[in-house]
Image (cartoon, rainbow over all chains, first blue to last red; front, side):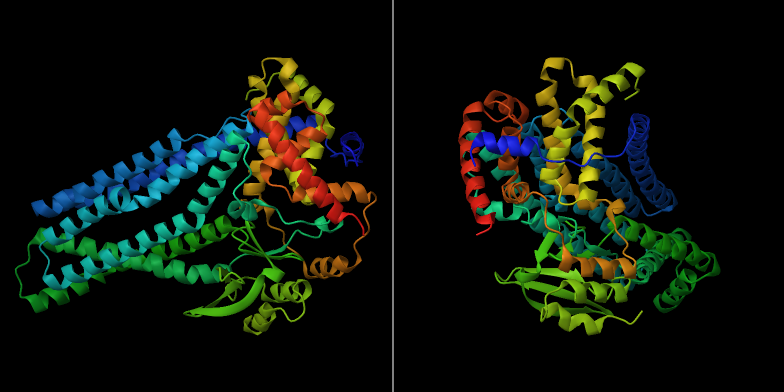
Length: 387
Length: 174
């Protein structure tokens, strides 16, 4: 087929016309514009509220603290929280998306700029996000007039939490941002020089080839992580938060009263004050906040796993692993939850939630219906609950 | 954008004149009819937002392709990240979907199907250039729509067409 025949075929193809009246269209677009503005305003308000919350909580500690070193610590925490909020807002404002009328190259450049900024933020997360408030917390902890038995575990918890957050950020950078950055660089380089794309990056960019007749079958059956699975850990987190907050409040109170009792009774006094009724009454709101957080998390994560004729769709549909690509499946157990490692021939492993997914029966039916016979994933269907 | 009746009229006129172009771009970048509908709406929204920036009507054609292709590339990258894409299958629907994969109908035009299947296999830039080529844009118009230098457009399009031709031969019935 020559060029003209191709163009003719292309331009004369039958197309399905969307069934929308002009009035409906204008009204839908006006609504969408309003929603977009509202979402942007809501995001700014959320950030201000989060910043205000930190300032109020740690400001309270600052004003109620007598020990000057501990006060300095709380002041560092407040200052570094403001700095972190500013840094995040500044990073977002200096990397705006390309305007709607931008060329492809301009849009790619804007996206690369934004991804690079995010990548650098994660790379240097230790210096601007973790260390400043971390130093403040440690200075406050060691500056308070509490005994050594309380200071050492607090310090260890802080360090362990910070190490975990650091590792999580570096993992996200290497798994998500660096490959995306390399892809965008390769695309931009190709657009600017006319050279072909780097083959290593093409594989990830190339969409899955489908026959058009199969295209309408591709929409996967999608599954969220079950609410109660999120709530278990959400509740542990929030009750833990309550506990830490009460420990800090109690330490701050004791410090203010400057108790001079013996170490053993001071410790018992400390424990009994943590679990006083004034503190216990706050468990209810924290418990509800845990439920709310889990609900929001479930809404935000949307579909965790999709199963279709093509394969398994992960990361909210952005990562598709074809059935044939999965050479081996291994189970991973963390507490009561079983996840699965999907292993490709190259050895690349991708984790997939499994027993934590909602609607086990539908999930089972989807895998039984869509996965090829004797696929290794089928071996793990027996792990799913009968619901 | 606070729209006036004149803006609305201009927008509707632009969309009515170019509906088929937009639909063809949607078909290149979105796999199934549900995604095509979503992408179509998204492109219209971006045109609506960008309309005040369209100063010269003479450039409306390349301007529109620019918006459509940019939105489509971005849509492909982000399409699954929104919660309103979640499809809750009822058990009966799920069974039907599973059964229907065994009995998919043949496309009415196999050549179009082969062409789309071949285009699906191109990378995003090649796909954009091939779409603009099939839409009968000149190299200069393609350069203006994509921001790629006109010489590079020629080189890249030549390579993409060769690849497309090879892929179509592979797709064609033996």
